[in-house]
Amino acid sequence: MSDDLLALENQVCFGLAVAARSVIALYRPVLEPLSLTHPQYLVMLALWERSPRSVKDLSEALQLEPATLSPLLKRLEVTGYLERKRSSSDERLLEVTLTDAGRALRAEAERIPHQIVDRLGLPVSDLENLRESLHAIIGAALRTP
Image (cartoon, rainbow, N blue to C red; front, top):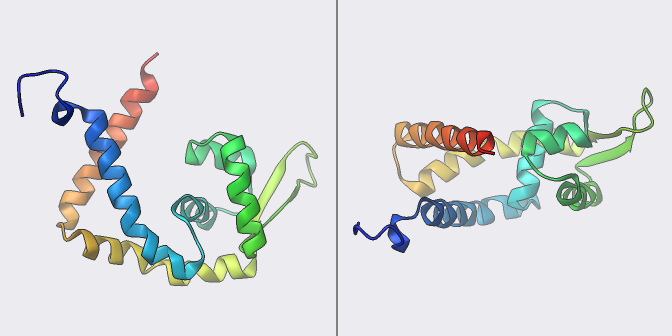
């Protein structure tokens, strides 16, 4: 690393961007047989944790704007993995619920983390440490005005 503060290799944002694109690219062939993109996979992970969820709740959990989330939900609904409908207790809320196919997909998806770890070829402890560091960076960035 050089002393130049503006050198590309010295930029945290550059390292994060390249790492994110590279890791997400590893997911593509693993998710393709499940008819999922990486953003759709993240939605499914959130729904496997809890279903039904409101669009607002999903948006907050995934840190995505509802306008970005909506097309993902539409495509997953067309695929048959989820249903969207108005809440019976509050008509203003749009609830997202896994279908039987969406719930069944979880068993297949359980292999994904192991496949990604194998593709990366890094010790799990390194990946756990990285995850902790990324959460700290996300928290710090969210606290910054």
